[in-house]
Length: 274
Image (cartoon, rainbow, N blue to C red; front, side, top):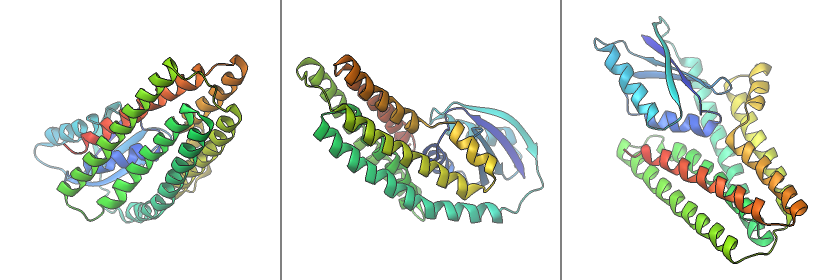
């Protein structure tokens, strides 16, 4: 049995982990995946074959297609071949996926609704980012027991749908910049984004808890803030700037950034369908 350690610099939350799992699902030689999100590391265990280098290249290429900044660190032989504990942890994660999906989808509804009411494009964009994460978890759950073709079709549908939403968002940002000078409700932006920040923190905590009960891992997961948490903080800052400057430009700026991230996530999902 061989194991290869990869450094994945852009793997900072469970949604990237699920993308990698789905991408590597078609490689039959892989026996186990060991993720360390706080340290952004992945260990791939796979059967030793005569053409070992080609198998490593195949695995590395598959992960690289997701544009998550993968770098192979080292490969070594291991006698470990019992992954019962890892499989048990994976089952626990799948149960938690339903909880995480529900939280993300609930905040998609909350943020999109309050975003339209408060006229904040930042909140609407953040809601789409929540929906993007829910897509990833949903695909993971739907993919269980499905064929590779069905998984690819599901990923393709989700990816194109996210691209459509992101494009609509960009158009709305442009429309508001050119015509709509009305200020968004900064109090709603700050309060709802703060609640979303707490929700993302809970999601991250639950996923880390399912993999390890060691306190250091939980603390580390909070230090390495995910893109979602950065976005939440960005919307809060935008709300403060809207009130301070008396301008809607900070809201439009954060909205544009988030829509770009949603578009980037959609492209990653589409790569799963290839």
